[in-house]
Amino acid sequence: MTSKEIIALTERYCAHNYKPKEVVISEGEGAVVRDPEGREYYDMLSAYSALNFGHRHPELVAAAKEQLDKVTLTSRAFHSELLGAFAERLAALTGMQAVLPMNTGAEAVETAIKTARRYAAFVRGVPEGKQNIVCCRGNFHGRTVTVVSMSTDPTARAGYGPFTPGFRAVEYGDARAIEEAIDQNTAAVLLEPIQGEAGVIVPPEGYLSAVREICSRKGVLMLADEVQTGFGRTGDMFACMHEGVQPDIYILGKALGGGIMPVSAVASTRDILGVFEPGSHGSTFGGNPLACAVGLKAMEIAVRDDYPALAREKGKFLQEAIRSVPNPDIKEVRGRGLLIGVEFRSEAAPYVARLIGSGVLAKETHETTVRFAPPLNMPSEQLEDAAERIRRALA
Image 1 (cartoon, rainbow, N blue to C red):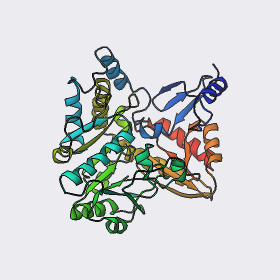
Image 2: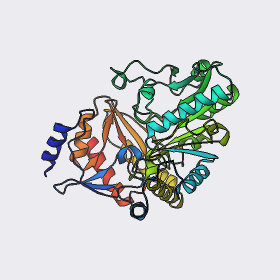
Image 3: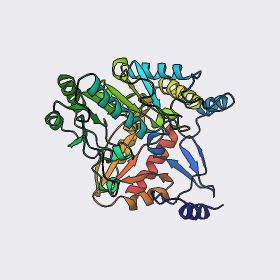
Image 4: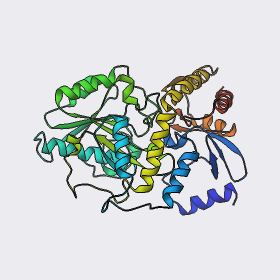
């Protein structure tokens, strides 16, 4: 089928909850993808950081194929061979003691919320049903009803009420606002170390460490949503590490599945995750053998090949290249590592169209910002070529 035929078929039978760019990806290898007609593009979005390793990383594909020949799903009704090893490696990587595996980022966020509420009720004695969680305006934590109950984006909320109570949204980047929102019933503070969907919003230096100090002093949990920023994307293995901060709960996903499987997890201390007993939370597919095989290999590669260093080096180059673009319509270039946002004074969609026409895949967010997040292992010569195409398209 041609690209036009595939798009028409998709539009006819799929719900229109997405409006994708009119590009069909039929093949991918590393940072390069192809459409059915053979046109090649640089993938500079990486499925919102799920493809930190690029498309079809050979070691990840091999790990998946090997596990496919053994067993793919057991459910948690029985033990499986790789779950313990997966949890051990992820706990070590995060500096935590225990892991609760799930599938999607939204499921991991839901798990963190349930953990925080239960810990507040069972350990701190907060009255059941009175627990509240402080979150940030502009957040994006997923699409479930409870998660969009925290959202300040009208498009994400319209028509989905009644919403889950117990959330207090404050201005992102303002530690004092967080402190003022905390009361005796506050279970946790939930934030993204960098807000990705909001337009790659980097908080002021010292913000994360200030939030950490406030949470410790007030006795509430700090929950870090690193679904997009984790596993090297921002130049540290996890973005909280930029300020030497250890949250009480890491919320992880996307790159953990190596671009092959939906894999997510929360990582925390044994004390905090100890609030769960059998039957109190679960997932049929969470921690399945195929997910564990891919996740184990993904973590191995990220550490062995020093993905944070790759992101720092390549991110510095790409940001400098974009900042040199002679265009007064560019309001700001911001980001950390290989998570970069280019904000325009006008709508960003026409620039995205020019990028696609130049063979570079990217997408706008919040109307005026283009987000760039290429694979962290993108070869330097490809990155240089992509940067020149970006310069021409944005000039």
